[in-house]
Structure formats: C-alpha cells, structure tokens
Figure 1: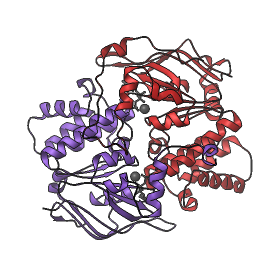
Figure 2: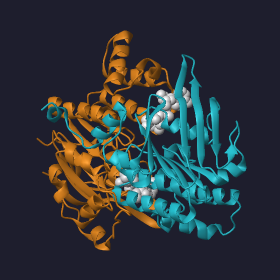
Figure 3: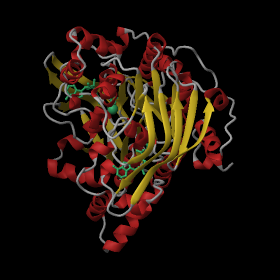
Figure 4: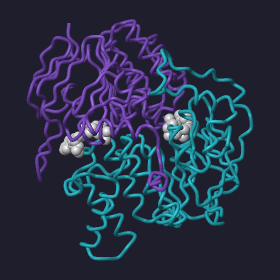
Length: 256
Length: 284
Ligand SMILES: Nc1ncnc2c1ncn2[C@@H]1O[C@H](COP(=O)(O)OP(=O)(O)OP(=O)(O)O)[C@@H](O)[C@H]1O
Ligand SMILES: Nc1ncnc2c1ncn2[C@@H]1O[C@H](COP(=O)(O)OP(=O)(O)OP(=O)(O)O)[C@@H](O)[C@H]1O
Ligand SMILES: [Mg+2]
Ligand SMILES: [Mg+2]
C-alpha cells in the first residue's frame, strides 16, 4: 500500500487581478508509515499542497494518490476516514458556536463510533486538556488549547494518514513535547503516515525521516533529515534556511 | 524609565464550574525595552495583554491596583478615551492574525483606513506608505497583496500584515502576541529587526509573547515566565538558560534539538505547588 504520491502537481488561484501560481510542478512521495517534513519560505505553497490533498482547492492539475486512492475533484467519505488534517489556523477551522464536546462527538458519530463518551474523555486527556474543557466554546480557549482541540478532532476518526500544518506552533515547548511524543507513539503503534509542515527545523528533525524544502511554489530540495543535521543541504535556499535556524542575531551583531 | 506599570492584575471568568481565575495577581513594569513573556499554554499571557488594552470581553472581569501608562491609570479612563489609547499609544498584534483582520475588506483598504486615522495626506501618500510597510515586512508581491482578502493570504503573510498594521500608528507600547510563530526564520529575522529598531531608535516599549525560548533569550532584555495565571520567575533574557524555577528548567529540557536527536522528548512533571506559590513581581 502506498502513502502519498504527488506527481507534477500545479495549484493556482484566479483572482480578479491575476493568476497566482501557488504550487508549481511538485513531485513528492511519502511511503506508508513514513513521516516527511515540509519546510520553506512563508507563502511558498506548503499549506496549499495539504489543502489540495484534502480536496479544498478545485484548481489543480497533475496527479495525487493517497492510500491507494487516485484523487479526483471530490473526496469520498472513505477518504476522510483514512486522511485527516490539522489546519494551520485552528480558530478558523473550529465552528465558533460548537462546544469542544459537539465538535468531537459529531466527528465520532460521523465515522460510526458508538462509545462516544469514553472516546471524548480519552482524546481530551491525550492532548493534555482536562474534563473541564469539554463544554467550552472556541472563544473561551487560549490559542494553544484551541490547537489541541483541532488535533483531537483530527485523531478522532483514527486516520491512517495525517496532514499536519504547523500543529504545535501555538504550544509551549512542554506541551509540544507531549503532543510530539503522542504522535510518535501513534505512528509506531499503528504505522501511521505523516506529512507535516513546520517552520521549526528541530521539530521536523525530531519527527521526520525526510525533509522537503519549498521556495516560491517549488520543492527545491528533498533530503534525509540526517543530511540536514550534518548541515549538508546543497540548494542555496536550504542552506540559508538551516544557517538562519541556528539562532537569532540582531542586525548590530550580525554585521560584526 | 518606566512607561507601563501593571500592579496586581486579575482576570476572572465565570464558568459552569465556578469562577475561573485566568490571571492571578500579576505585577510588572515595562520601560523602553523588550520584555519577553513565555509560559504554559493557557497560563494567561494573552489575557494579560488584552487586559492592558481593556479588551477582555464580558462576562470576563478585570481588576488591578492600577495599569498605568506614563503615570495615567488606564482603568480610570472612559471607553472613549480608551479608544484613543488603543488607536495611538498602545497597539496589540493578536495571536490569531487572520481572525483579527476584517474578512470582507481587502488588505489595502484596511491598511489605508488605519493610516487615515493617524495621518493627513493625499491618497497617493497613504498608498505609498502602505506599500512601504508591506515591503518592510518582506511581502514579496505587495501590489497583489494590497488587493487580496485575508483568506487569500498564507498564515505567515497574515501575521506580517497584522504587524505592519499595528506599526502604522507609531505606538509607544507594542504588545506582540506570538507575532512570528508562522514565519520562517529568515523572514522572522527581518520582522524582528524592525521591532528592535523601534525600541532602540524611538524608545518604544515592547511586550513580546512567545513560545520560542531561544528566540526570547536572544532577542529580549528581560523575561517573565508565567504558569497558571501567575509569574513564577523573572530574569534577564540572556540568563534564561540559568533559570532556577523547576517549571522553567523543565521547559528548557523539553526542547527538541537539531544537533542532538533524542528518541523521546522530556516532558514536565507538573508540581501542584507551582500554582500555589505567590506571583513573583516583574516590576523593576
Ligand atoms: N484562496 C486564495 N486565493 C488567492 N491566493 C491564495 C489563496 N490561498 C493562498 N493563496 C496564495 O498562495 C500562496 C501560497 O500560500 P500558502 O498558504 O500555501 O503558503 P505557506 O507556504 O503555507 O506559507 P506560511 O508558512 O506563511 O503559512 C501565497 O502567495 C498565498 O497568497
Ligand atoms: N471566556 C472564557 N471563559 C473561561 N475561561 C477562559 C475564557 N477565555 C480564556 N479563558 C481561559 O483563560 C486562560 C488564559 O488564557 P490565555 O489566552 O491568556 O492563555 P495563554 O497563556 O495566552 O495561552 P496560549 O499560549 O495557549 O495562547 C486559559 O486557561 C483559558 O482557557
Ligand atoms: Mg501555511
Ligand atoms: Mg495566547
């Protein structure tokens, strides 16, 4: 069985002024059970690739295959049972008038689970939220608490493939460690496949075997994480990204 | 010189399980400096920022001995006077930038509007200024982005638009709530250099809320560490790695490292006593 196979993918947006070519001729493979990181410049098309996979963008060409299913214009119900996504912007992806309980129970019911009450408790505790959060609404949660609800919702259908768009960007590092450990455990136990976007190279290094670097809509380099650790990227943009990850220097210090 | 001083700040919310204290007796001062705030998810960082601007929504409640800006207690001001403070003296970059932008107005319209509130000038001057701000925050194609709606922006673009908008009024105090969490490191550096310059050249006071410990340590002057609605430790930013509170030490240990891969990340053993200890003062 395959994980994700993307071949010659182009994604564009037509706006009144012009066409925005957000993703250009991208080829990417994630084998079943593998975890691949997607990094790169802000606005380079990372979220667009994930959104195209989940069927949220109609304007694309090329081919995409996920868990042995060749993707067309529409996604089947079966697709969302196998593939779930954690969106970059948890606020926008949670319905403002649905409580945490409603969000999770609806997802669980939709996917045919019956022991809903138990599952909700388990999901919440897995993402480090106590029972007190169960009846809260999104506006009553902090940024990181919302992000964890979004993660719990994605885990609820027990998917095989997770598309993770900056899943821990709003979490403090101790909660981040708990969530990343959870994701690592799930992958080991159930052979899950991850495609994960992050701007934090240390997080990608911890979670993934391969890293794909994007700039201006294109993947400019794919390398094993081991090579990244040894500071051996070949493309100038990947080098630049890696070097600047090694620490912030203010303008004054950097001219010295 | 102290510009902002917060003494004994509380933020309370009624919930179905009784009153929840989101912020519990926090005190700190801010001079012409970069003050970092790090801490547990849900520990009250954003609520502290919003409380200063009196932006806590009902039924939430704010109390404090005072929240003073250059000696004037913001809690005593009328709502009208407060709007003036928000428009001109204190800006806040919200944690959810795309949510805070108006979804049915283009980026350009929103930026022009906030510019018009600050300065007089021709429409062309305003437009030039907006373009200049977009370029300053490293937006690659400002002419397209000016005509874009918020949902047409990437996460990091939304964040940079928000930063550019909050800098238009040239505020005395900027509260930046995770302003760079969606930015790649090189764009992040450019944005931080802008903030840095404002502190150095114009004496702006900056509150910088972030989860990135290494960044806060390198970029800020002082750091407050929050846990469960309180400040548990306050230290010089470059001494963050020598922090003594077990919570702060635990945070430092749970960081994944590019140069030293581990099988599992260390997690915290949270001690109930941390939440009980009195808040440490961040007043200098
Ligand atoms: N609905 C849309 N209409 C028009 N342009 C869009 C739309 N959605 C995205 N874009 C454009 O596509 C490009 C890629 O955006 P995308 O969100 O994929 O970037 P990203 O790599 O995820 O960036 P970030 O790290 O900042 O989140 C950007 O230039 C963005 O403005
Ligand atoms: N309307 C509300 N009703 C009840 N509790 C609330 C409400 N709004 C916020 N809270 C709670 O207040 C606490 C502090 O929230 P705040 O947004 O300040 O956290 P934070 O430190 O910014 O966290 P994060 O790093 O996750 O953004 C959280 O535990 C949150 O659940
Ligand atoms: Mg994105
Ligand atoms: Mg917050």
